[in-house]
Image 1 (cartoon, one colour):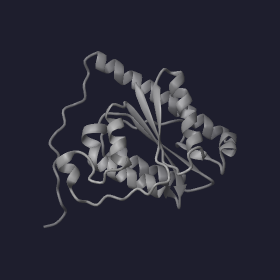
Image 2 (cartoon, rainbow, N blue to C red):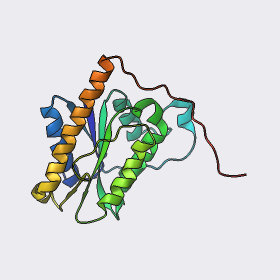
Image 3 (cartoon, rainbow, N blue to C red):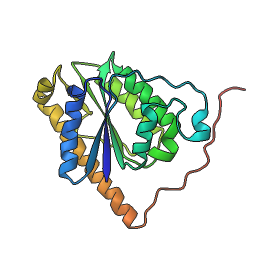
Image 4 (spheres, one colour):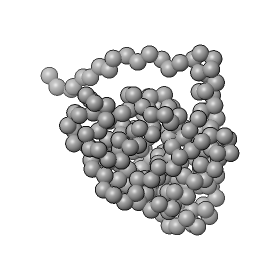
Length: 207
């Protein structure tokens, strides 16, 4: 079993990375393989609404989004991490998730557990978490929770580690993700598969 942890911060080893690393340690301790996926500092274009992905299953913009989609196909779970910018997720991870989930949610993400974590100095964390959680809710993904909302505070990795409650929240989240993955694996071994999907019905609210 493998979980991909997505660092949506441009800082490779900053506060968001520190939070994800705490989760990663718990997953590894439970025997879950992990991979850290860094978005980096390169600009990520927003969705063009071109419809290419409907026909081809990948995004027309050949960048980090398609690279991640290939990795995600074989992954069993996901943790998306973001800094908080103006009480919302960062611009890069927002553009990234818009395109990843629009182009691949039905064939890649359905039935796979996911969680979001956010890092902030002081406020705006719950609004950012609400934003990120909507991607999972529309994609039929089990959402992994912790003992409190998945947030951690600090202006530097050292300050993040001093947020003892936040650190504990990350540890609990890692343990809960590992537990759910084992439960899903046990269910598959017992012959329990995902429910059959209905053909999606679209309705537009116009007369």
